[in-house]
Image (cartoon, rainbow, N blue to C red):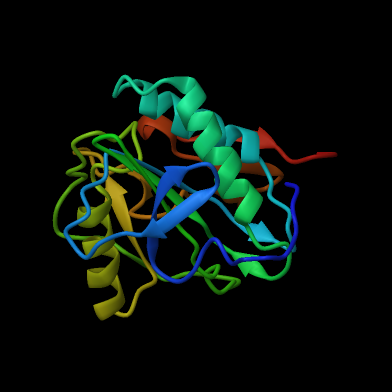
Amino acid sequence: MTGGEDLSPVGAGRLVWTGARTFVPLPSRACDIDVADSWLVDGGRCRGLELHRQRFAGSCRRHDVAPGIVDAFLEDVIDVLPRGGRWFPRVEYHAGEFRFWLRPAPRLSASVVLWVPGVGDSRTEPSVKGPDLAALEALRDEAGRAGAGEALLLSPQGEVREGALSGLMWWRGDGLCAPPDGRTYCRASPGG
């Protein structure tokens, strides 16, 4: 990421990209989302930023958005990100409109309490982040009311798929495990 500390182009709340490094406040209205992505920025650094870019651009292509426009939007977002502090920016696309939301990063914790909702995974497009965000945020809110920090999404067979708003990984011995596509797999830890 390059650029200075000047945050004058961005402020609180959701913003709409108008091109040429210009962002304006999103008018108050319901915000449908076709595609979204977010990532952690800590001290101006981000792990896997290119992977986030690829995922967002790939999902936008499903809506016939030209890659050059997506690239220009993401470059403008990256240019206005703060170089200090911890942030969790979110980019969104819906019906020809690109949006940006600069949010403080969530607080780090050593553990999380998980909650299993009484319903299975009801996402309509599990391979795309965005269309189901409102329902997933509602699940996370319900988990909070139950004293948990995250809701688990389960397959019809009761297998863990992922968290409502987070991916799940855990250590089993020296293996780092995750539940992709309803299957658990493990990779050996570095040096293990």
